[in-house]
Image 1 (cartoon, rainbow, N blue to C red):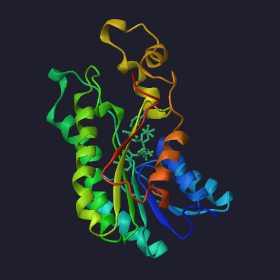
Image 2: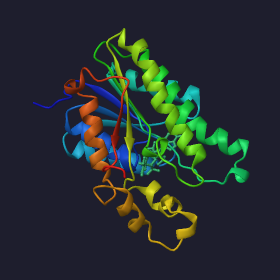
Image 3: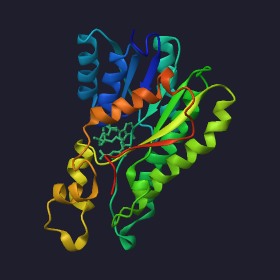
Length: 255
Ligand SMILES: NC(=O)c1ccc[n+]([C@@H]2O[C@H](COP(=O)([O-])OP(=O)(O)OC[C@H]3O[C@@H](n4cnc5c(N)ncnc54)[C@H](OP(=O)(O)O)[C@@H]3O)[C@@H](O)[C@H]2O)c1
């Protein structure tokens, strides 16, 4: 018996990376999945095709979650297509590194618009349609809990996510809906590929990012996106019926 049979899920930012694997895994468990993307339409269609080829059901919907009206439109189109909504995985996010003196208000606004406002307002839009048993997962990061040079904006934006799920839990709990966050550690995606070099201490700029990662992670490797998706699949399933307001670290045992 598949765990998410008859469920409808939206996964924001699922054209690639962690989001893609979440969409694939939820579909494998029987959910009909809305694959959201900002600009990678071909990649999103590929994800939909892969799901269909495996006997699942999916559709791609473009929406930039940093725009409140687009998030609303995404949710409305999903409900129009599948007639209901049971699961929201708010995964879309962007990373940023910058020294204190370099950070501009535009940088602040860009990061917080996607990582904080983007997540809050897609949750707001989805919550209108979720019924008792509904599930929401937002995306924080190990970066909310650790010190990394020049990672202030990103770390702060991800810390806000854990505060949001803690405070939304009672409000949504009254309606039988759970809301949690996932906090991945370094995960092998485009984002990690582009930014791994910045995670090193400035005095160790010639050290290979992999060596640093090994020294900071009990399991001594990056996560694969599938491993993050597996934890999210648990959180949106019936098995996680008494978990809400939590942030689940999936970080290979951060040292
Ligand atoms: N990778 C890591 O090491 C790591 C660690 C901790 C937390 N995280 C978090 O996990 C999430 C996924 O990360 P990832 O590594 O898979 O990132 P990624 O490889 O950069 O993929 C990002 C995805 O988000 C979408 N996206 C970005 N901005 C968007 C917007 N404004 N509206 C809609 N979609 C948007 C992208 O769509 P397009 O393809 O259309 O651009 C893409 O599908 C993020 O929230 C990230 O902060 C990642």
